[in-house]
Length: 353
Ligand SMILES: Cc1cc2nc3c(=O)[nH]c(=O)nc-3n(C[C@H](O)[C@H](O)[C@H](O)COP(=O)(O)O)c2cc1C
Image (cartoon, rainbow, N blue to C red):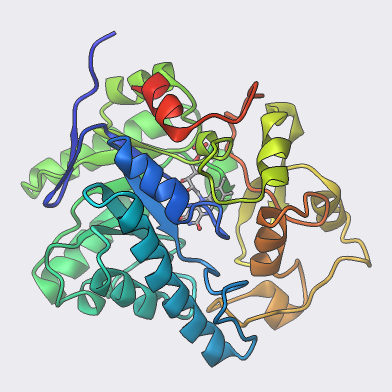
């Protein structure tokens, strides 16, 4: 087995081309991100709902957003203490109402990179313009999205992304594109080739990082063989000692199997991949016992808040991560496998590399 190459994202060079996927709510916090960074990968703190259950929490929207900021500052400081020299980033969800403030906060408090999910970060460079060393990495699901971001950023801010993360929608954990069912299995390879051709045409030398369904070294090798320069891995890091979720959440994941996966609707209006449990059953049959109370007015557009359908995403993800494995929502990637025991991140990284 040959060595994997290193991964350059903007000014930051990771020893291993592995980005740990951000996982909300507080599944990937400082402990997981710091451990992955120490092991030579890129660690990501998930900022979605980070203020919930923090000492700063208050349900009033403006106070909730203030709590998110303060909790993110704490989490970044903690991650930096764990990994003073590692590469640590923050994931912000464009679909949240405070995404610009969180991106700015992350940049101002030492994040090396900002990864965006759930939307088009068309004005992101403006929020972080005072921090030129902070790399910007949008997650995209197709060529058109990448093109629009490059053109808009270049025209309005004279800058380009420092990498793209490309979703493999058939296997990614959590939300995926609604049109995914219509795509065939060769779509990922075609999209990587199209994206690479586009980047070459504008002479932009940045890595394409693939995410979704990457579990072991053979998956990584397959992604490199079709043109990826890095991978982003989420679910595999849940069953680690350093994962920030409750022990019961991790233990539940130890037994997870692809047969247990379900697709549920989400209040953001997209389908989401999760492990089946009481909560997903209630969602799928729209049980009258399903709680539909918006707890923090966090999303720009939310089916729960605006139409009283689905459920509160923040509450459902947070409950799970705190150990309520029956009534919480457990996102999971489509390549999940049973794992014998919870392992230190360093061991998982060693087996991947
Ligand atoms: C529990 C969980 C929570 C997630 N939360 C986020 C998030 O807050 N932001 C985001 O961009 N992606 C999120 N994702 C997607 C992951 O970052 C990653 O892209 C995905 O899990 C990759 O697929 P894999 O789990 O098969 O490796 C989440 C995934 C999981 C499993």
